[in-house]
Length: 177
Image 1: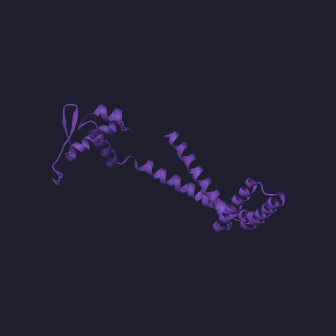
Image 2: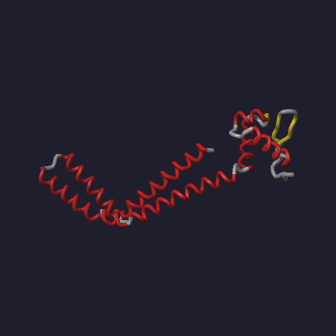
Image 3: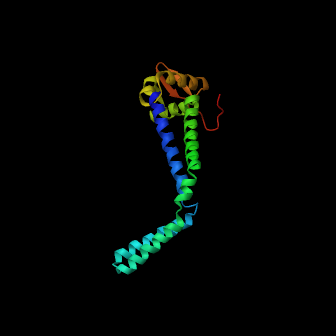
């Protein structure tokens, strides 16, 4: 359980930091994605100009125009002014990720998923399997495997003969007991 908490904490931290950086980026360009795209196109044009072997004065003018455009698009002051909101967005995302995974751990494994896992294994093994097969091939523990097979036996989806469980096949459209 300790390893799960470490992984969950790392995942929440990464998601939170990523969200905070995205919020910082949005504040840095004041939400002007079009301006960012214009800057990127101008930077690509400058690189093509450099690759073509243009004269030095044309390159210098293009670099100055790119710097000016960068000053218009980016606003480090706005990004710095909004840092509390950016950090808050990151913390909210991290808390959301933490809560989602905590809820999943608290509710435990869902029985319907375990039943589908056992039925799929049975289909892969030709309709017959043992408890040992289920424990060995699936991620279910011995206790979970016994509980799943007991539920499937109750539902009439499996039959048992000795140690072997077998899928119960019904004609299409037949009601389940």
